[in-house]
Length: 254
Image (tube, rainbow, N blue to C red; front, side, top):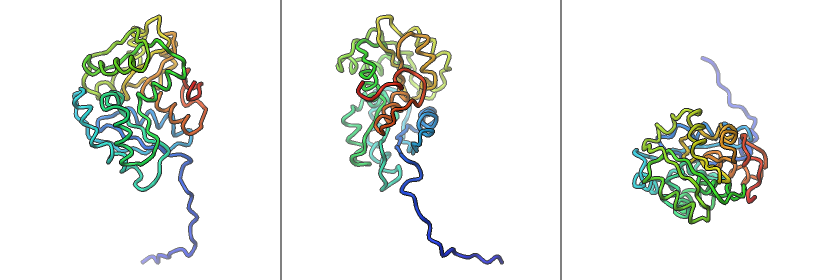
């Protein structure tokens, strides 16, 4: 039998395997967020650590709000007892329905004091960094699910020139909208009077084609995962660009 020896040499341990680490609380049905953040953030030395929480379609205000009780445990189980540089909650419409303050409070119960980034908070910051006052919005949701978002943008002081929704209620189908179709929908959704276009939903695969959307619409464009990645970079004092597009050239705060 092979003799097994235990080394007498003690290993030196690094504080962290990567320079920065963020948590992602993703939906159980999500196809897109992990792929987007791995592509945009991991090459910049940011580890993305994911935990999924229960979610059941259809996408309605009621099913979105039902995720709130799981947020604390979802965050707590990401590298338990270790600190994170930020936690992203990976659902745009639920962040609107639940509310930013409630999302932060829930995640802080799992990861006290950790900066919380939601797609909608990142989008609001991104629109202000761009200097947009008039916006167009494209969502894959139903009118019922889109309405709270329209009201939020108006309450935050933005003039919504055009708000287009696709009437979908399954986030797994939203993840399957072909990229060229996203560009076509974006072209139709962008009003000529708008300063920027927001393509909502962490499931929609828009983050990797923001430059194509901008070329097609003629205005700066943001998507949920794209804005959140930008927000995380700036929180970590990384002023570089994780993807193409106008917002990635700007600092947090304009």
